[in-house]
Image 1 (cartoon, rainbow, N blue to C red):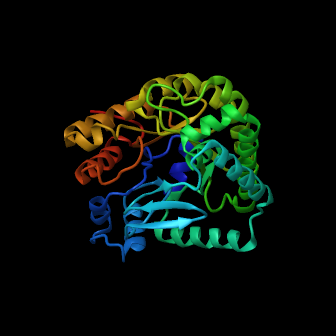
Image 2 (cartoon, one colour; image 1 turned 180 degrees about the vertical axis):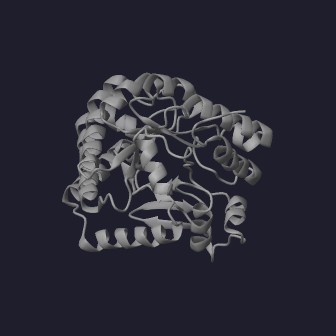
Image 3 (cartoon, rainbow, N blue to C red; image 1 turned 45 degrees about the vertical axis):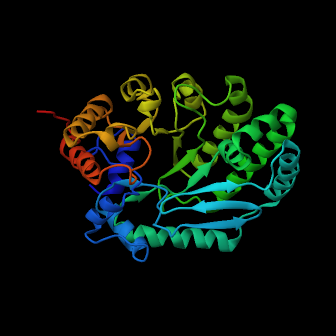
Length: 355
């Protein structure tokens, strides 16, 4: 069975030859192990892709090691480290300054149309990676609903203050973000490239959601549903991603039409077993292997037991991609990553047996 066949069977709740492994690989030592050569900034692209090809069935957000630096763009200052980038400084400090910035951003978003060059560059870059991934399925893109895009750009505190003062402006901003993304969807969607995409918005903390049920009903669910529908028009399934505890709002999320759920963050209060029991006939699941305690601090034996338990909890009836609850970064010992993958291959074969 090819990796794509394994992925498609799992998404469609058909029994594959084994449970597919889905993850993000940002661990220098594990990458070097699977690529059989030491990872450097210079050989990053080839080495990372070869490592993924030799270890994972499905992945997304492929990144290559970078040299630390700062980038200034449109008034924002971004801090770049080896595997990640974040906003260090914003071009506004008050709600009033943010509101002026948002008004201009709405105009920019409303005028945005994907250019021919953007579309061609996206496709050629994807095909370049696909060739080197040797069958590993890459999610077509990361497709933002718009909510966490907005509060990440604004900073959560200023975002909340602005919504309290001017909810209409924030709503117009969220609408502009969502419609701009939908235009991008229709420009780049191609089932032949990949049968699955990530739709995302980090909307929960450990133990609770970031916003109220009323806010979600007004400002989030309708836009998530519209985005999912756009992808479905191209026969592409949507894996919804949000960190945190989503248990109280899972029924509402499922009503939007999402096909799958990730990462099922157990340390935040999510239960892989319960999600499978309650919703395993409606959505496929991806994740569930704790990366807060088990993967970084557990022994190889503990990791093995955790993987076997996840397979018991969610592997029956297909519809489960085994993987970590975030990503496999340098905070996780490489030996635990290797153990997770090898255990998944050993015990994830159908029909499932644990003797």
